[in-house]
Amino acid sequence: MALGAGFFFVLLSSILGLAGPRIFGWAIDSISSAGERHDLLPYILLLLSVECAAAIFIYYQRILLLGTSRKIDFDLRNDFFNHLLRLPFSFYNRRKTGDIMALATNDLEAVRMFIGPGLWNGVELVIMIVIALPIMFSISPRLTLFSLLPMAITPIIVMRISPLLHNRFTTVQEQFAALSSHVQENLNGIRVVKGYTREKSVLGRFRALNADYVDGNMALVRVYGGFFPLLMAVAGIGLGVVIWLGGREVIRGAITLGDMVAFTQYHALLTWPMIALGWVINLFERGTASLIRVNEIVDTEPEIRDEEGVVADARITRGEIEFRDLTFAYDDESDPVLSDLSLRIPGGATIGITGPTGSGKTTLLNMIPRLFQPDRGTLFIDGIDVRDIPLETLRRSIGMVPQESFLFSESISENISFGTDALDHEGSITAATISQIHEEVVEFPNGYDQTIGERGVTLSGGQKQRLALSRAIIRDPVILILDDAFSSVDTSTEEAILDGLRGTLAERTSLIVSHRVTTLRDTDLVIYLEEGTITEMGSHQELIDGGGRYAGMVERQALIEELESLG
Image (cartoon, rainbow, N blue to C red):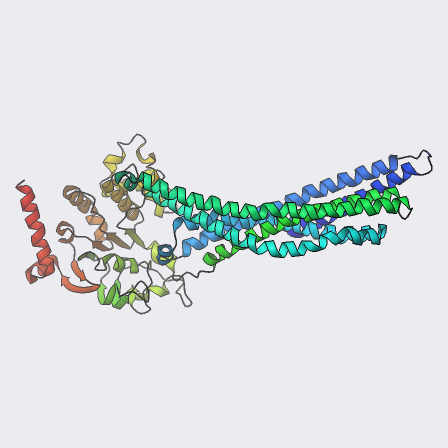
């Protein structure tokens, strides 16, 4: 509706704008006729009225068309970000963050520029040509044909230059993405960069990428920079033809001086569309190149999503988990990370999971909230196939503390309440108390309102893990997943956390990955994973008595503790 109204105002403003030269020509003829005094006031008033009305229409066309382009841009960005949130881990394993950031900023802005100024000027250009040419023919068909002959080469120029603009702009956007990725990665890893004194190397790489970006832009500028002068030269030749032939037409009385002035103004009005054509085509090529890049992401179907036949009213109440011959590989070319794994976890049980690095512990946990996609019929919660449970229902029932504790650059209370629908200050205190971080939080200058910096940079590793644990606890989940959640805290803090968690663990199904015996010994069941397969399973004491790999791990840790106690 707004676009239609905007283009209607473009039509009105163009018609009125094109009426101006004709009125001006009549005024010139009235001045030059017979030496008599004529009243110019009607022409002046008519010209002022037309120009004022055109100005009003131009104002509204800008408001409607540019405003609509901003609204479309708003929707595009929202849809793009919403789509990014739906994409699985595998997508982010393939794409660099800087590339995605470039798409969300530069590329979407290029699309908006085409939808707004580009489309508007393109339509205005067509309207000007369609209306102005008949008026010019009515004044002098011969003069019109000769003045437009130089413009006949314009389509040839456009056809030759447009592909160059498209290709070079695509290259520029790809170079900008590479530059953004380099900056993002090295700022995120600034501690590593400084720790290994790699500043010069990182700066050198940045300069090389920046030079490529500048070179790409200069290559684009060389093409685009020559586009305008070339079109202006064509328009200038046409104007020379108008003055030469038009002057001769006036001298021999074929047209009046007013007609000549009006015709010259119409030719000038067509000159701007010819020049603007280069700008519009540039916007079009930029917009289409960026739209292709954006559509590569938008057209990516989320592998993990609610499927047909999902049980809309499914609820997770007991937290009973069952794996049935589960096999999983990250892609078709990789070896399975989990192989024929079968396990039943009763609701309310606390399960300890351990095993060597790379045995599939984290992958196994990530299957439960469908961060990775299990095959149908291989994973059930409360007797329902997880692929039949709505994703939102499934994940709202789970509290998860991953290996790498990610925190946002917000306050402590906002980070703890992240998984809840509203900021819960009292709940944050309760959760922080259970995870043994409350006493440290209250010592911060602003307590729970303390902003912790990007990725929690102002906190220690142990503090970040305990805040992440608080974030999981405050959700009061049916299933609690702790993936090596105590690795950054000392043994005494770990024991205090486990003591605080006893009541919490007893009320829900809990899965705890750990390499520490102190964490595993009080669980209901311990699972030992090797190469994606359960090789040992039983209580802590049963596995020790069995004398297998778990027992060996317990012996090694006991020996280490004994050696440490001896100093």
